[in-house]
Length: 400
Ligand code: AMP
Ligand code: MG
Image (cartoon, rainbow, N blue to C red; front, side):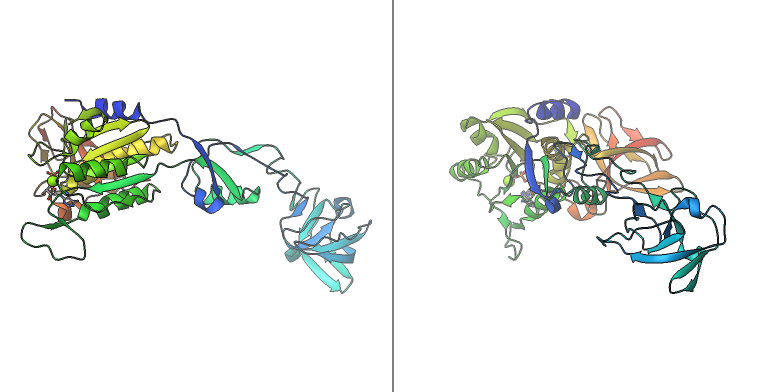
């Protein structure tokens, strides 16, 4: 049986190189830039005032107080530029372009308006005071965002600044979520004896959504080979097909058998992890197939451990896996050694360090207990026991 690291490496080795795609600016949020973004103009694009005040020629106002004649007013967005001669000032607003002859601005708070046409500067100003020179932030043609940068709110503003109404990002995979099991009923149904609601459809959809993917969720597939076959064919219309349930060793777990019959190459079936040991991953052409266990906690955890890194790699992210941090265990944790255990835990930043509290549960079906976890505490396969106070590593579930 492969270790987690071996299994993940195998999977990632089969994820195709990220492919560029163009999207409208708003859809680029959270995505990775596939090409550098260059400035299409200087920034600021003109000599600009930082303050509300009076634009002057600094050589006129080396000494203060000094009176100047007001010969005009410019606001941000004005196209007209008053001319400025020696002894003159132009009233100016924040963000407005300076008249060509002006090289400094005195802020209004340091002036006294003598009359409609005269202002007194109470303090001197030097060259370039309160003025941003054209191109002082960025020069035309410079790279403002490099390839590989993740688009956040500030990047969205930078893209808008330089006219990127469309943005070249890495494409996302099309994803299908395919629940399997005779016992599954829809969320709006009252389960009869032996039935359960199809909760994984929602968990896995939500996990995809958090990666920026709008997954297609197929109706539950009955445990019957021909129906499983049809669902595989349907799933293969997407880039990634995520099955849940029916991948273990039960009599009616048809997914692995039918995948093999459908010429899907299986990279691995089972990994030395807990929860989620029955996981299966394979490929047909460029389509990747995941068979996640049906137990809700196992499905959740294996999505985070395998699907997430695969998707993030597909989309060009540098960091694929959940963020790992060190913390201090505040209660003991134990396991039966043999597989790497990703144990649900609550991790909080308290007094300058992460404190990690394992969450006791009834096992892999106990999604209610799991829902209060925000992290996975790592117990290596050969570790039976961790003591309170010990330094441990956890994977954060809610950290982008
Ligand atoms: P399986 O992996 O098919 O053997 O299923 C393991 C357990 O997970 C069983 O108790 C199933 O009823 C449950 N299960 C399977 N699929 C789902 C699902 N879509 N939503 C919630 N529970 C499920
Ligand atoms: Mg089943």
